[in-house]
Length: 160
Image 1: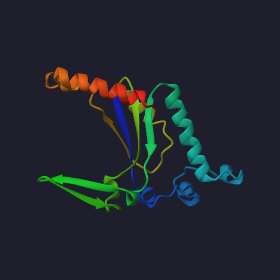
Image 2: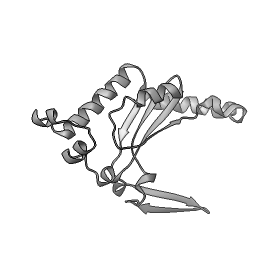
Image 3: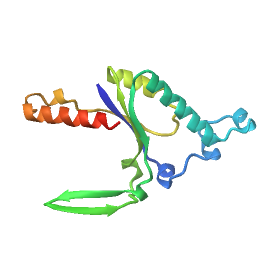
Image 4: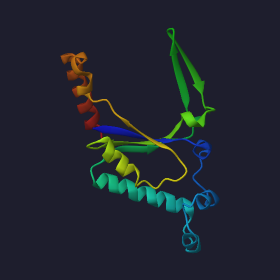
């Protein structure tokens, strides 16, 4: 099964900045030994995330993963009554935004949860959602639809 792991946005990610030393120290993400050794908190956080991502890749779990720019650099398109309305960011409700995501291939939701518990996060919320697979559509997926999906997935895979 595939799952999307969604990292929720917060004021800091919406500001487009990485955690600073005070924030990381306040939430216990960095200790005095690292500061004394001259390791910058941003470097530590990025190194920890890089190590975690490497573990995911080596285990065959990670299919994709990206951090997102703040919503101030984005837009929303609303479709209603045949109209398309574009709203430029930023967007007010950070609790409704995401700061990044992974796409994982796992055997179960429990496996995804166990992997996520190992992530180097503190003071944030992360959501895991199962991705629809073609077989989830059952009889609603016509032969033509299945063939089209397979063709598109093959084309996408060929571009990587």
